[in-house]
Amino acid sequence: MIQTILITGASSGIGKALAFEMSNRGYAIGLTARRIEELEKIRDEIKKERSSAIVAIRKLDVTDYNDVPIAVNSIVEELNGFDIAFVNAGIGLGEEVGKGQFEKSRCTIETNLIGAIATIDAATNYFLERGRGHIVGVASVAAFRGLPRSASYSASKAGMSVYLEALRAETYGRNIDVTVLYPGFIDTPLNDMLKSRPFLISVEKGAAIIAGLIEKKVKSSTVPVFPWNIVGRLLKILPTSIIAKM
Image: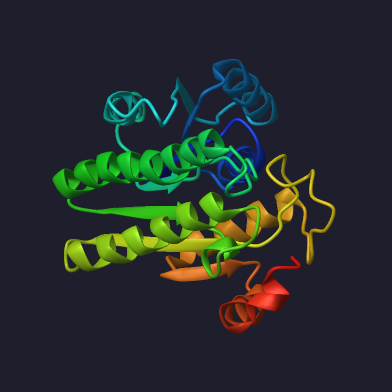
């Protein structure tokens, strides 16, 4: 039986690369994003490479919370269900605290955390009715420690991580797997303006690693596993004086 995955934030970055990766692995894919014209291009590219590919697209802004369950149900209807929800839609605006940039903070939290929660809630509702499913949430290594000029981003990803941990406990024994991923620096438009991106990997490599972790149904993992599994632990214990220089 063909496996099916829903990918949010699929118009660029990790979401777009994972769409190609999972389609190449034989998955049917449902793609959502704010920019429907980009999703149309991705669908057409995938179908050009493999005419038998199954691709459904749906415009979705995850901060339109009332539309999230409608969009999820639309993908369910078009693909006759889905097995995996890859909750990926997110932004990073890099605000500084106390500099009159609260609007950036609000947008970040509304998209990365509340929008993610709305998506997870809708997908979990479907999986509970179906009797099985797999929720995969994209957090970040920034969830391990609040980073300067990324306070809201760090908070949103830490919040998502904790929310997914709670979901795992709440759905324990209900045949719903929950995976939390903590990517390091993957070459995407989200971070390509930064001066320093240690241990950078290509988005294609990142998508391949993520696909493998999804198929293994890991509970949590950094992406890539090494060196971020070690760096992540260090981030939690480094003195603030060092964190302040990052």
